[in-house]
Length: 274
Ligand SMILES: C[S@@+](CC[C@H](N)C(=O)[O-])C[C@H]1O[C@@H](n2cnc3c(N)ncnc32)[C@H](O)[C@@H]1O
Ligand SMILES: [Zn+2]
Picture 1 (cartoon, rainbow, N blue to C red):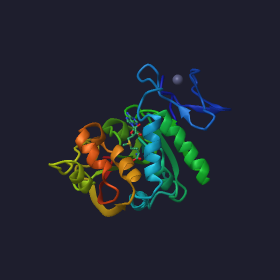
Picture 2: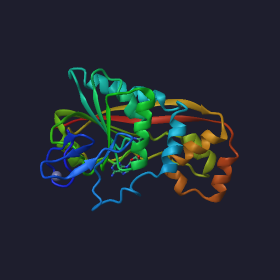
Picture 3: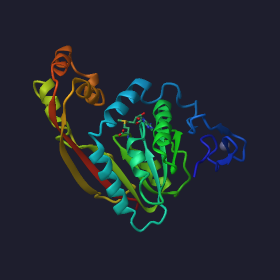
């Protein structure tokens, strides 16, 4: 399944490392993941979400506000993999493993999560250890240079993460499924209305996935969630891209909120490899 990030040959597990026939070797960290991010292109210390961002996301997700989404994604994957006996599923940009752990419940599935953030991947290992999940493997790697062999996966899942047409097409088997999850236009609209004078709806994401069938199946999944603490509202806001571009006045309005009902809105697109 794993390939060498340097020469692209197959990696074999030998004791506590993954090695290719040419002798490139990648140690398995104490927590159980492997770092396959080449330092030539990325600084593994700083790539992707930092430790604070991972912690904030974990704290929010563990409250369960997005559990209906996790269950929905698993259901969509299960439906699309109904004819596959032991599906291999890649969670690309898996973050701290919230959706990955849910995907692991699919019968006989082998799950491979990758994220460019070492902090996120380390947390994935903690999550699966605590939950006693055995069928998940994690690596630090980029979605734009996946450490997986050609045609090895039955499905790639990408939840609020960067999407790579070429790499997803390369690693998927023929007719393999690509499940892309993004915010719907109404996602968190009420939160934006509380903070901004002129809130706007999210624009649909355009991915240019020309290696996949023209029109994906598209599911809009929306529900309301009531946030009843300042801390949860703050954590949710800090998970959004708005946290970077909000004025001090907007942040003061956010801090004044101690409860709010928001629309959690998502678009789940299912593509098939041509
Ligand atoms: C918004 S988070 C979503 C994480 C997770 N899928 C979730 O929904 O909880 C985006 C994730 O993409 C990761 N990321 C950013 N650039 C990446 C890349 N080139 N390859 C892989 N992951 C990347 C970040 O480290 C972060 O964990
Ligand atoms: Zn190699």
